[in-house]
Image 1: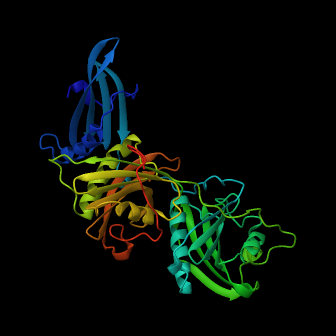
Image 2: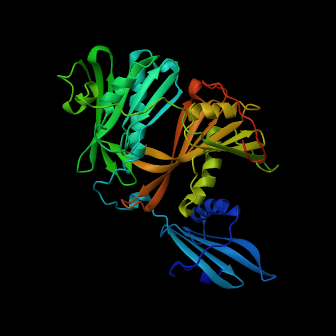
Length: 445
């Protein structure tokens, strides 16, 4: 690399026109080279050649990379016909070296003003015994607060094999939604409904909140769980207490803020939710290929998570993040990658199990998506890759440190071995919901 291309003191300029599949591999290799560079520790350089045709003549060019681990900085330049046309410098500072301003962060936008009413399959085993459904609801509330910094306000009606969800008006807004009690009363005695849960959160001016889940039973019996959290940069919720749970009968011992759910005020009208419908159709696409003879098939959960995760991690500092979820399945040297985007009525786990069972048993598979990971007492936006093989699960995550305004400040790789998955696995576990998958055409499913 020329001296000119390795400097990082020039301002960013221009736009890049040379793009290659080699780029993801290059960025991963740079990190490894920089850590092992005996001549100049902490530095690595790379280059991708290219050509283009302008006005009938061919121009040669290249895209050059300089990684400096000491400055935690990646510099990318592009040259055509000996002239630099674009430059970009990316800060790759590790998160523990960055001071992030403390203080409250705003919740998401309140959301749509009109309610929605969906019906979807539900695992009957989650109904009984009584505590199982509550544990299920608490676990999902924990994930919602972690990834949204609020607990969306909604009504869940659960029966044998189904769940109906009313997303109340402005689902991300705090406090009890108008019409909640009247709507619950109108829907609670629908045929087959056995359990009734209402969820939401109370907000405060200092950036803190309290998530709550209220189950309403027969004869004004109730159970309620509450847990405090704070809203962090990047719309991440961080729990600050354990769940507090109580049960009772009637209004006297129920929190005054929730009494309107159990006993609607006189004259309150139910929200016109109509009949439940299936959620909007999710997006589903697939493409595949065959590994080169020189490439090894990943046969362990760790190996497949590393292989798929590294490809996406290399592009993340450049703004390349997966939309929805991407599932890559290896059946020997044959591989297929599925794009899963939207709300799947049968649940994402069942969708993966159905894809896994579509052909020959997979050697391994990996799911990659953006999510939230708790690590060392804090929560981070993360690129999460979950690999599975031989009945075991392995998670690889790139944690992203964010400023209050949403700027990315740095990243860090963490891993977790989940061990044997049993009936919670994806490979060789039949889906709860029966479904069939078929290819519509090349690159589609």
